[in-house]
Image (cartoon, rainbow, N blue to C red; front, top):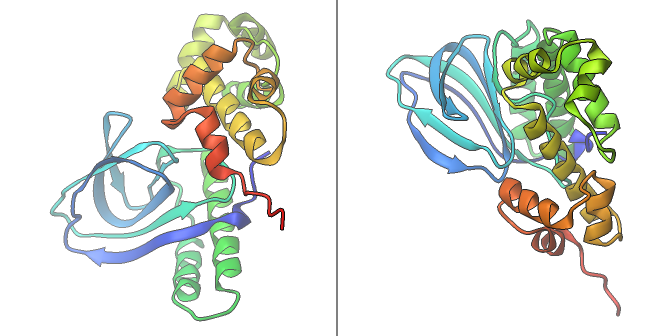
Length: 257
């Protein structure tokens, strides 16, 4: 299950109408970045590909992704969130999200801006609740269009992360050939099945490191890694840090006074 979005902390929120879009240089993010294009157009680079956002589209960069925006001289109107979480959060959807702005998205964004700029003692809770609603609405807009076989495979992977999983096994679950399933999954998600599976396993390991006392080797095993060295290499590749460093940085020291 996903960590609660009610733990969201807002590092920034922009709601601008501009005559152009300034460039943002490529940088790996330590937070989630979500941008709605409400009018006009904007140009981004996501996973090495150029993406054009038009009115009604959005783009979501998860933690660890490299965000880059290109300069455009066209008028635009957009809303953008920079969000971090108390616990590791892997969004259900990410990247270019076309045609996902609904009729009530703008009123919700206006309400968020009002609360974000308020001095209410419940400001954080209200903003987190509004963002949670916007995120799940966004996810529904995208997943409603997702291929049923891909959705079934993602659900299966999520429920069997600790087990050995083969491509033939997944193909049998959705009654497709392995080759066709691989092609379909990459087309729908932007990841290969193995890339997606490894990311899911590492995110589960990150959550366990913060919330459980098991050793790193046992956590790796519970997340489907039979070889601890492979787990270590994969964890570092996907997070930019070692598993031990990650756990140490996020564990709260126990006060023994």
